[in-house]
Each structure stands twice: as structure tokens, then as C-alpha cells.
Length: 116
Image 1 (spheres, rainbow, N blue to C red):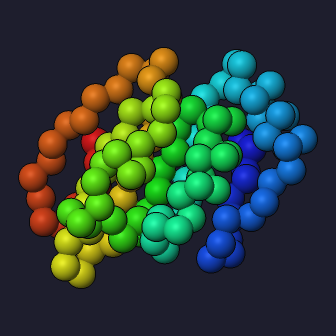
Image 2 (cartoon, rainbow, N blue to C red; image 1 turned 45 degrees about the vertical axis):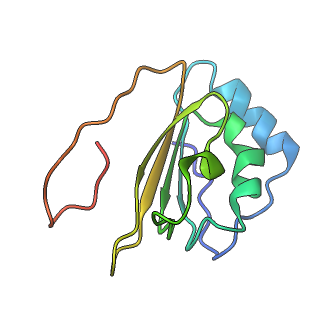
């Protein structure tokens, strides 16, 4: 497993060499990036700069609600699946490269915070 996780509250700046290595690694593997971002607003441009090295991105604690449009957080060549923040909730988003088959399943539960 290749770990490029970020434990700080901000997105670390990864060198282009690391991203290039990830892209070469991805030729035979599916790379997943998981990010606890504590509000995507104001940090989204950094996400867009780095996502190309990954096939799937999950973002937790997006703090996106209905006041934001989906187009504000769309990324070319990726399907986006979001669960908006609700009162007391945090919001999640999943981006999957369009070349990978994907679709959203609806789960009705007040106990599960998920996108399937």
C-alpha cells in the first residue's frame, strides 16, 4: 500500500516527482486518495491540482450544503457523488475517474453516513 495521507489540517504540498511516481504506479493499480479536509471551500483548487494522480478521491468533512452548487466542485474527467452536510452532519464527497465504471446506490438510514 502506498500511503500519501495527510495528518495535518491543511493539504500538504507534494512534489511533482511524487505525483509522477504515483502516475507510473497507477498504470497497473487503482490509486485511492482519502482526505479529511474540514471544509472543502477555499481548499478545492489544491485538490484539483493533485487529483490527476489518483483514480478515486474521498473527502470527509466537506461542510458542503445546499447553498453550494455541484458545479462549484466538479472536476473534469471525474464523476462526483456528494452527500451534503445536514444540521450536525459534516458532508462527504467521492470522485471516481470517468474511465472506471461507477454509479450511486441510495441507502436510507439515519445511522449511516455513506455514499454507495
